[in-house]
Image: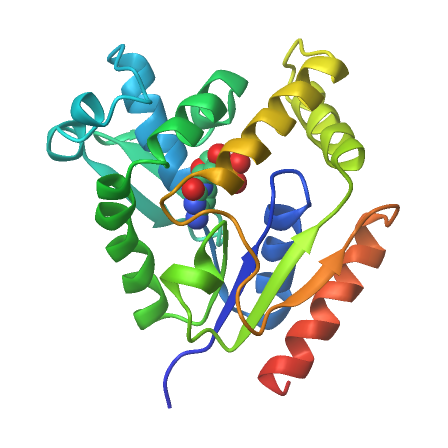
Length: 225
Ligand code: DC
């Protein structure tokens, strides 16, 4: 029997990572945050002052930097850039913009996809991202498209950033989020869209526990737990 995979896609701030992590824990699966991989390359571009929108400048980075993903004993995913643990650094709002830029480059996506597929070949996974059900794991056992109203998503992102000590204001977070939605949905390479056979779950107005139940129900139905 092969390994099981659960794909969770959706726009930023829908609660994907928190919910995917909780579902993985409940199921005993490995949680894979694919956005963190793009963020790590985005951070590399930022540090080297490479324009993230410029494919010709970004593509050579793929050979120049090393990006590793490792799971700690606690099951948490850590990202390494040239051996340095950058798991916290990649959460800065500026890195979000760089991640969105580099992720629109087809060569970047092709290069980073193998890392993602390899994890699913060796583990039961809950993988979250933008193109997991559509491109990375189209054969996933369960595909979920998780969404919520933009204002709800921005409020969650805002609170998350504030908790981490970032000095952001809500309007800026909302504006950035809408800009990123627009970019992620309209880019030519693997745009964010609902996969065939995906269950759409909307977490607008739902708290964490209610959203978690919604997702876990869909997962349990799908994998026959
Ligand atoms: O989920 P996130 O905010 O950490 O993702 C950061 C960026 O990476 C986001 O703008 C879209 C991109 N991304 C992607 O293109 N494909 C994925 N599978 C995951 C993220």
